[in-house]
Image (tube, rainbow, N blue to C red; front, side, top):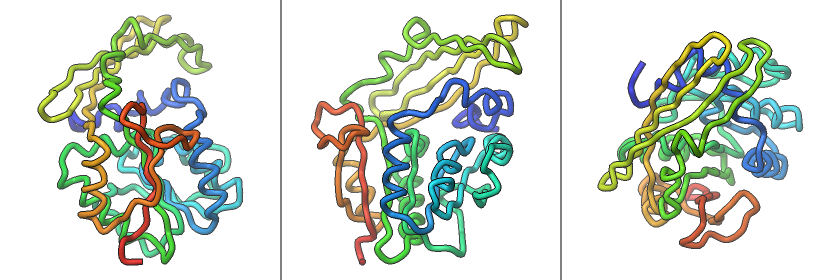
Length: 251
């Protein structure tokens, strides 16, 4: 387990992940894109598989890839999991025999790539796995919105009641390295009825839109559309999100 991604590799965190990460407008965006694209879909960084199973239920052939076995164990137990091919692999090194009509990377998972080298390696591998005419979609937070300023215990505290663990309180705090654009996050989970307190740590990187476009170009991808939110509003410098849909530059 590494400091960079222990939140995603922890069995405890994976077991309660869906209680704090419900279906959202972001999932609607990717589900709609998958339904319009059809064919074979790759959910890269599929996590606990909620979206992958919904896309499969909509009639697409789906492969879910994630580097965290803890997340995949949850995914394989979901309703509809038998309709998805689950693969444990990192995006930089996956080597699948299939070529995909759509590859998407949701939930700001792209921000876990902390260097340009890692980002280009993953994006180039995405390009290699795209079918002729295939599309790649990814989201990342716009650093101009400075989301990390709102990641404080007071502003992020949420309590859910779970059947397995009764009441759980989750909150976050964060610190930023402005020079690198990297934010260190501490994720606190307090099991209120047992008194257990767990802390998971992760690191994510923020890049501006022009930086992301340069990374896509280096990896052999070309942007087709830029959006500033999940409702496909055009990207502006003030947008909270950066969404891009891209294709292989040589196709």
